[in-house]
Image (cartoon, rainbow over all chains, first blue to last red; front, side):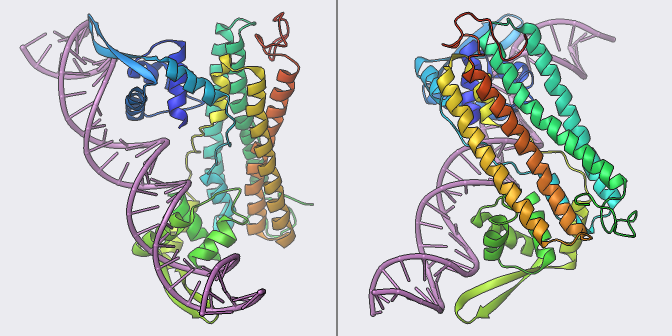
Length: 197
Length: 197
DNA sequence: GTCTATTATATGTTTCATCATATATCACGC
DNA sequence: GCGTGATATATGATGAAACATATAATAGAC
């Protein structure tokens, strides 16, 4: 499971608590790349501990509730490195938006546009978030820092997809607004189309 | 759930059996957009039947085992149209490849390249599959056919992402091969980098 | 002193997806 | 007549993710 290894990667930097993993990592710089539920994080930490890949130590702190600091064991480090060097199939993407277009024959232009615009705005929001993350990584980094360059590369991978999607959605929206869909209210003649001609 | 509605969309064209949905649809033209396990299809059909959105009739056929033909009820049609016109959040994407780059500080260049190339090849394979699907849709369609244009648009949405991803991976692979990563065996000086300068 | 927000961890339930496996009919080759 | 492959449906087990809820300590406001 990838979440396990994401957590191992984060603990490889330094020991952290479940709370810190959630609030400082998965809700922070990692958010546009991988999100995780709080419940899932604690259960995964427990599982990693049972597997001997991390150890936990309870820390008492004045002024705050106790917390459990997790850190990598040598076995955890090995598991992380092995996972990092192992090629993997890219994930299967299931996007309801594509289905709504695919089956959209009887949906009218206005409804289609509403569906497309909502997705466009959300992809734009994610793109902005990715750019923020990228800027923050750039600010932290030294130019000879392998880790920082790889992080930017990783964020960049998410950026190119988000940008391609926003551009495609903009094209779709413009075309439909121009009445390019056959059978639309704006296309009584059937002469103009999204594709071809 | 989107699978439910994908099935409603397919049954809206014509009545089909579970087997046909699997072999002719989800393993066919729909494959690059949405895949579904056989077990999941039959269980979803059962659920749609219990919800009154489809009806099933057992068909005896000489030379073949019996099959159950499912068709939309009026309620099923309403549910489909309502879903189609409802905007929805785009899915959260969790891509292990991005994590492997993000945490790749201690991975050496050769291992990184192997990971990237494997993903590149698989995205290229998917891109080819999408182009086949697109070509088959284009061959079937009349130019004034709203359904056909929307299907091509939908496939096109998947195409632009796959292409953007392949291009990005090509850039990454070329850069690493050129020794652009700080700390790599090929970059003893630390002077050349993937980003900046 | 009580209420609220923050910090911190934990458990129960449900849904979706995958995998494995079971079962049955029929065509066809041999 | 026996195995094999295609057609066809179904169930059990498991895992990943989401959502809700519970609990508890402390700080600070009022």
